[in-house]
Image 1 (cartoon, helix red, strand yellow):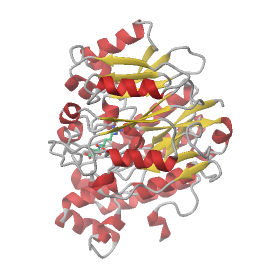
Image 2 (image 1 turned 180 degrees about the vertical axis):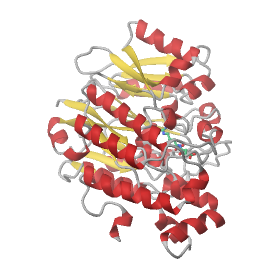
Image 3 (image 1 turned 45 degrees about the vertical axis):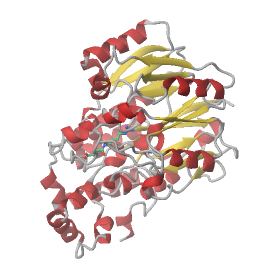
Amino acid sequence: MKATEANADGLIGPTHSYAGLSPGNLASSLNRGEASNPRAAVLQGLQKMKALADLGLPQFVLPPQERPYIPFLRSLGFTGSDAAVLETAWKQAPSFAAAACSASAMWAANAATVTPSADSADGRVHFTPANLTTNLHRSLEHRQTKRSLQALFPDPDRFAVHDALPSVAHLADEGAANHVRLCADHGESGVNLMVWGREAFEAWDGAFPARQTREASEAIMRRHEAGRPVLARQGRAAIAGGTFHNDVVCVGALDTLFFHDLAFEDTAGTKAAIRAAATGFEPVFVEVSSDDLPLADAISSYLFNSMLIRVPGEDRMTLVCPTETRDNPRSHAVAQGLAASNGPIGAVRYVDVRQSMRNGGGPACLRLRVVLTEAELAATHPAMRMTDDLFARLTVWGERWYRDRLTASDLSDPALLTETREALDELTTILDLGGVFYPFQKG
Ligand code: SUG
């Protein structure tokens, strides 16, 4: 069956901010308290989506979530008007208030794990929204993420959108950030590599959290009835060095796995398991050594948090990297070396997603990959597909509603609450999401 790889990017929300909410994510910690520029952020994200759409890849937009998220604060006992809830929460429980304001749903690689129909036993595309249980601010996302996925993939005969796994530490799940699919061609059955950091009942003593459990990965493969799962342990040294998701040091597409030598605890065993599971193709491993690129450079420059894509009409693949990769001499040398070699990666392109990068989110974090057949593509919600027209409308929308500077104190401003709701109301119409898509629209 012929299929293409589509990308669904999270549209960056109006409360994009640097609150230092993710321990183990070095960029998030480093930039804590800095002023953000939500307007620049949303425009950078839109430019990236447009660039991918212009290359001929199907591109979708996932709407941001309702933030500040007042229902969460009410569940903690704050009462009164929505403005009063926000104001009191910021005074009495600032860490919870910051979590309720985070725009973190923008990183759509963490939205869900996806199994294409070529790999699932029932021939449907399966989605499990990630419970994101490790971080408070991210644990608030999965219910609305499910609504977004159902809006984009509405036909239950073709698409199965599951609930998240139970929200407990034993089943900590971060979605596609820890999943790589390798195959001969997108429409052929693939190897599903699931990378986990700890076991459910293991006493984890790392300085930084291991955000994915082996049991969560197993449960997702089981419920999707996904063919050819390969489970691999994330390198402990990688996590200790700031690899909070595997996609910070590894990306794969088609027959190629591109990764840092510290990505896996057992590199030889992981490669052997992938080889054994692959049928109809010989996996190509492009491994970058710590000598050529120390882990710290890989993480700060996000060479591996790139999109590895096949541009229609081109033989070799293209790596879409953040501009930070070009700015790091070692990463840049590795990237240039790849393009100059006769290997599977023939070109490198750069995109500016600096606002997202400062929270640890590169080009690959911002997108959820979904392999779709022609018929499945035709069954997606057309208003969420990136076109020149949608790009123009969302650019005007972002320029109108988003502030160009946001600090922690701005997040408690009741005017921001009103502004974001008006913006999301308008977006609901632009993306044709129905009358009640966000909880605040229930009235
Ligand atoms: O979960 N940052 C996100 C970045 C997610 C990147 N995604 C992938 N690697 N796929 C996270 O750590 C920081 C928010 C703050 O500190 O304000 C944050 O949530």
